[in-house]
Image 1 (tube, helix red, strand yellow):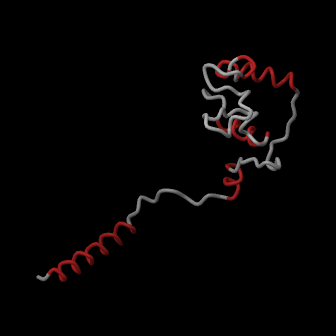
Image 2 (image 1 turned 180 degrees about the vertical axis):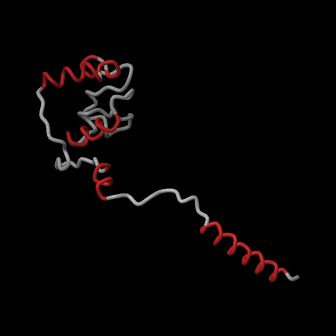
Image 3 (image 1 turned 90 degrees about the horizontal axis):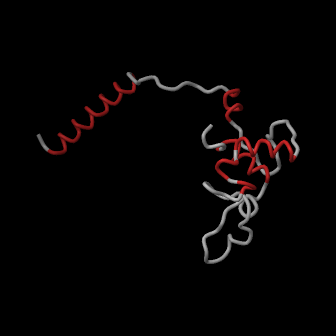
Length: 124
């Protein structure tokens, strides 16, 4: 049998096996409904579209910070043991590594809200 014939036979066998494998797929997954997609789409843009209803005061925010953020971000957001939340203005440009904080790096409050909702507190 020539090399060409062997390759043709191997290719034919591969087609037969792959067709069988497709027919016997594990049947994983399912169609996702538009309602499910809507519930997963929690992105918040700079314009605020998609923000949940609500309100708050600085005093209420202080209580939330004390309960959920203080242990990692320190008194007044100064850092330790984790990243500082304040400071860093003017550090994004230049030769030194930037200090990425709310005041220096996060361009919109809505972007910060989106990040905090998805990733903080770390232990929750």
